[in-house]
Image (cartoon, rainbow, N blue to C red; front, side):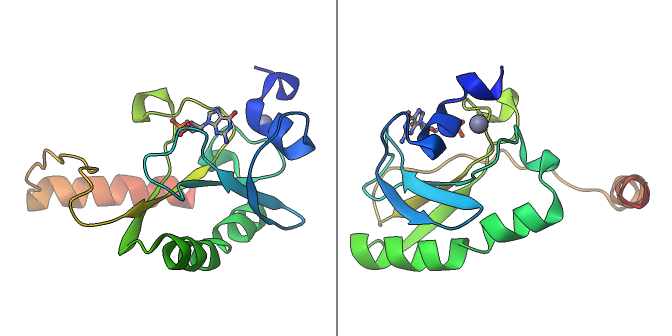
Length: 140
Ligand code: 5GP
Ligand code: ZN
């Protein structure tokens, strides 16, 4: 998909409307058009990147640096007791819009939102092998 077809790039440019709540030089937050709760916001870099993994460190820092203030504002205004910060990377994880974005989803007790984690056990030997491989991958 080209940037020209990207719905969030169109929101950034203003060619399709949105309810903007926050804007900086490099990022934008606006209300989700199909909210899971009142005040559900999406925070995005203005520049098009498909996934979180593509973000240069400075862009990631600039975008994620807005989260505390956005969370405080959303919680204050909605009266939510808390919120979930959700970031879907890849279709298998539920990413539908291929312009990286972070959800801020206000939560109140008994709202019926949530997820079921089918947790697995972590054996020491397997954990150490995984740790070694991930640490090595990070070193490049
Ligand atoms: P994803 O499933 O990719 O993590 O989340 C995409 C989110 O974008 C969904 O929650 C969806 O409601 C929201 N969304 C999709 N199209 C639009 C749009 O045109 N405007 C706004 N404000 N939100 C959108
Ligand atoms: Zn885009």
